[in-house]
Image (cartoon, rainbow, N blue to C red; front, side, top):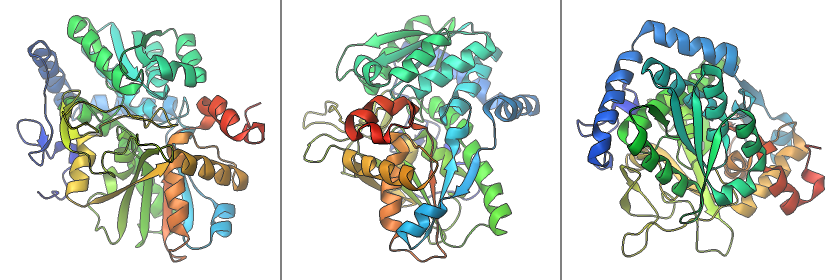
Length: 414
């Protein structure tokens, strides 16, 4: 099992949609094979179409706000010592998170397919918020499936979705979180695929949805590559890219342009949600050696019990609270191109406190997991090492959780 040079990872699958003959695929009911095939044909044409690429880039620049900033965290770097710590502030994007890239592309595809409705899933609320924004922008009716637990803990994004005219469908089954929202969204699409497009919120699900999302979020690394060359003259020889990993969309987007580089020069570090300390539940299948299973139409490492049933997860971060992970990350783990570890709820909160104390930056709880590991490891690295964290979401959506866990001292949204 090897990575291929100069070929995007999203295309390194076999005719069955499997990466490394183990991950991904299209494990879907017969009724979904035709709409999936139609979407595959449409996307394969449009991703190479100059007019479509021009349209995508136009909206990314003029509506999303590309490029987002690359900034050095001088105060934090001085306090920590060791490596230079930087942040790619993807939360600058319209709506406050990386999910806007995928939502924009899916709505453009839906318009080209002649669909009038679009549905999507959400956990932290960012995928739903961005899809509601894009649907409103492009004149599509929007329906969002969201776990009842997540609706309670991510109220700011819930209000934003409703303000944009989206219908929110609460999901009360299972753990009432992201995994259940994805399942209900797919069930709805099975019955309505003739008139409705579906946007899967991350690089998960049947092969085509992994590819569309990865193609969309790779905008992040395209920007970063240009910014690094402008800042340093070339890609730094000691570069470490830290990113949180739930489904895996922001991390793939952050790493995409650098996967070809040698690991000793550019290291890719994914940080999963380890859950609360002293809890047996987590959302870190790559870190804790979960077995391969089928979830939402794809083979992947997934948290499951001895009978192969999907285990419930637990994390302070709604956006990382997923029992599986993208087939792309499973492949990167098995080929040893990326390294994966986990941060606990408490680690993420400590990192949030530290970053906000020293910098004018408020990362959401998702990238706070990545900041936790980056800060810990930066202390042991040389000063010529460049550490970059993808600050892929802002903390506005987490204001209630932060107030409850840390007190008003760290609530900077009043």
